[in-house]
Amino acid sequence: MIAIPAIDIREGACVQLVGGSVEEEKIRIADPTSALERWESAGFERIHVVDLDAALGSGDNTDVIDDLLAEANSSIQVGGGVRSMDRIDDLLGAGADHVVVGTRALEEIDWLDEVVSRYPGRIIVAADVRERQVVTRGWAVRLSLRIDEAVERLNALPLGGLLVTAVHVEGRMVGPDVALMTSVVDAAAFPVIASGGIATMNDLRTLQSAGVAAAVIGMALYTGALDACTVAEEFFE
Image 1 (tube, rainbow, N blue to C red):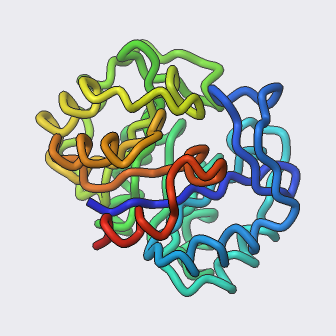
Image 2: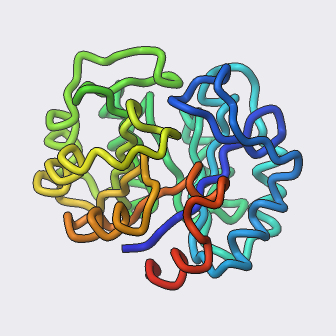
Image 3: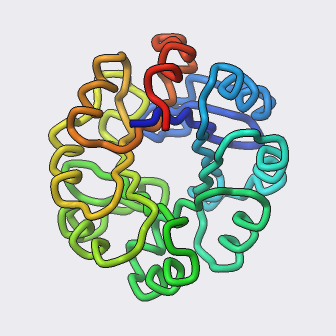
């Protein structure tokens, strides 16, 4: 299993939110490239970049993401409000290794089929989950779709992975929803990436034992609850 630091971008800054709420912003770093340099220096090989403003429909951070892609020495996966083929083309052309798609991919399976046919193995679908239900559009809309139904729908596609975020524990450092992740791993035909609640090395080892392919970590790294170098040394590709 590989550990992946998150760089969530809001208003041009690197931030960490609790439960996805902009009212509960706990971390703010003015220059996201400094976060990139910090995680690469610690030894991480892949970084997860999210445009929160684009995801929430309140603007975008295209220039910031372009700068990160230009500066990166690591593998970068980019998501947040990616809803068009043109944007996917631009991100992959700018150096992203994978593009993460969420809302439109889950609402329009025909569009997703077209995308993954064009870029097999390079598209990661993001499923944000609360009480086993998938939520979209910055966690504001609950779909009439359960995560197990989503996995069944996606299994036939050549995805690069499925990123499952347990919204109810996101940013709270209370431990991951292991039961959720285990059930997704058991049902999925592609790599599963876990996010939400990770706070300790034991949390990471538990996810690894459950068969999770990668874990995205935010708050625990930014607060120092997890030592970045120790995590990067144990969990790598």
